Length: 462
Image 1: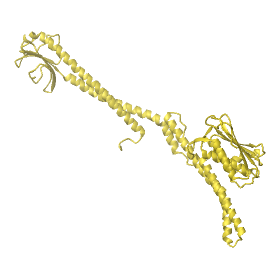
Image 2: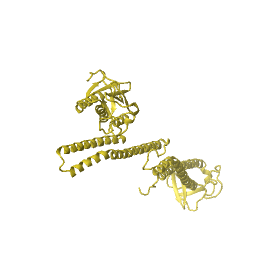
Image 3: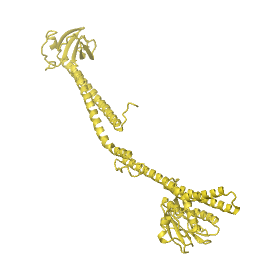
Image 4: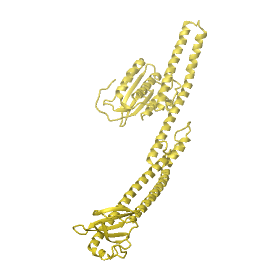
C-alpha cells in the first residue's frame, strides 16, 4: 500500500493506464493467437492439397533421379515455396523434389500431420500412403519459418501498440482528471484561506460536477453552522457578562454588609437576605433564559415531533393559574380537533409559558388574561391578551429583542421573555405579532404552521 501514488490524480491515472494496458494486451494476444492459428490451419489445408496433387502424379517423381534438383511439374507448386516433397518406401527415400534442408530429415514412420525440428529449422509434415498395402508413402513438408517470423513480428507490434496505448491513455486521463479535479482544487485553496473569525460563505459555490457541487454546498452549510454556533457562544458570553454584572455586584455588596456588620439587627439582616435570594433567583432565571437562547441560536435542537396544541395549551394555563393565583386566566379552544404541529414540545411550551407569565407580570394586578386558539388555512394562532397598560406601537418590534424592558414595567424581569418567544416562533417557521387587546392591554399572537387539517369535533375547555 505504501508504494501507491499519494495523489488522487496519480492513482486514477495509474489505474486507468493499467486497465488499458491489460485490455489492449489481452485483446491483441487473442487476435495474435487467432491469426497464428488461422495461418497454421491454412498451411495444413495447403499441405493436404499438395498431397492430393502429388499422389495423383506420383509417376513424375519416379520418372527422374531420386534427388534431382529441377523445377516441379505441378504448376509451380514447389518452386520457391520452401517446401519439400518426398516419396518413401520401406524406410528409404525413393524420390524427392523441392527445397532440401542442410540437415537430412528423418523418414516418416506414420501417416498424418507432424511438426519436425531439424538443424534449427521447423517443418510441418503430412504423410499419406499411396497404395492400400502402404508400400509407398508420399510426404509433403513446409518450412514454418515464415509463420514463425510473422508471429514474432505481430508479437512485437502488439507490444508496441500496447505501450503506446498505455502512454496515450495515461496522458489523456491525466489531462482529463486535471480538468475534473479543478473544482476540488478551488475548494482546497479556498478552505486553506478560511478565516476562523468569519468562516461562513468563503468557499466557492460550484454548480458542476454534481458531486463536487454537493460537497461545496455541504461544506458551506457546515461552515455556516460553525459560525452560528461560535456567534451564539460569543453572544451568550457577552450577554451573560453584561447582564450578570449588576446582580452579582449587588449580591457581593450584600455579602460584604453581612461580613462587616455581624451585629446587624435581625430585621435588617432579613432584608439583606431577601435581597440576596431575589438576586440569586434573578441570576438563575437569567442563565436559564440565556442557555435556551444559545441552544436555539446554535440549532442544538431535538428531532421534531407532533404537538397537540390543545393539550399543551391547557396544561400551560393550568400551571400559570398556580404560579399567578391573583390573575384570572380564561381559555378558549376551537370546537374542532386542532391539527398537529411539527416541532419541539419543550420549545412551544416555553414560548406559551413566557407569554402567560409576561401577561401576568406586566398586566393589571389582579386582572384578566384571555388565552385563545384559532385556526387558519395553514396556521394555528395562540393569542394571549391582558388588560394592562400594553406596549406603544413604536416599541413593539424592539420589545422582541433581548434584554429590552418597557419604561413603565412593574417587574424585575430579565428582558428575555418575548425574545425567547420570538426565537421559538422562528425555529418553528412561525410568527410573533404584538398588538392591542380589546381589554386595552397587550395582545400577543403566536402563529405556528399546522401539519395536517383538523380531524374531529371536540369539547371546549374553559
